[in-house]
Length: 372
Image (cartoon, rainbow, N blue to C red):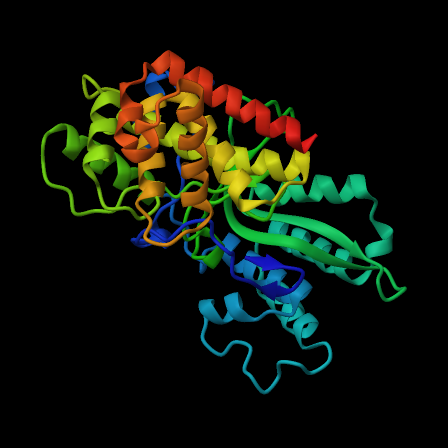
């Protein structure tokens, strides 16, 4: 990921699940408002891997070079295209970009590449409306970026808030307990970025990332559990599959139907919770974020959400995930007057689904009121 000219690492909210060749995968389109559409069967989607050496990939690489003076992607296309000895010399990125423009044979792309150079060299000639229109044109070439004017030096020049080679898919998804009218997209990277190694709510106002490998992993675990098989893989946040998780998954998926759809929904609601807390409430507290995400996923699917809670409890160290799960159990114990839930959390599975949903919604709303 490129942010303001630097390559950065995301501080991920949970341990990484094995990446399994992300560069050959991308996230699937979400079709259904209520996740009930048969089109969700396409979540075992075909790869849309697009090589960085493609026409659009090369254009992307040179845009990153031009605006961020970052030769990484250009050098991925052809090693030492921008040798170390020239990096840092004044104007090296502009000269290299102009050389690239001279190699473009397609008239439309040549015109577009000239336009990008003009934006860089003469940013004052472009209005915000024009820049947003150009961003939309770039999306059609699988280049997702956001222009930004930097006036910190007293001279206005153009930078990029981000620049990603991939596509984005509008999520027609409503959070079960919060309202957000602004559109949110699922980003689908075509090449490897550190920030997209595991599912997360991302740095960006209107984008989340759901790692399809994680969804497939947890789907496979659930199916194996229901079939009575042994499971060696780690569930959701990197937890071994405990008897409590097994029981929760069996209760969540009686009939072995809709497993992958519900697990996609679980991941999406989890990340949307963090996104809305960031955007709407300017809240980045990790414990609150995980506690409200738990409430949201449990409300949406009580026993699948509880499987996630049990995975949080399975951490060896005290961290925001485990604290959130302990806070949730304490609340349920107090509301039911059942101290056994704190001593043996598996007793929470004796509570009916509708009552679990009610308690989860009440705890969620109580936390939201504290933030207002």
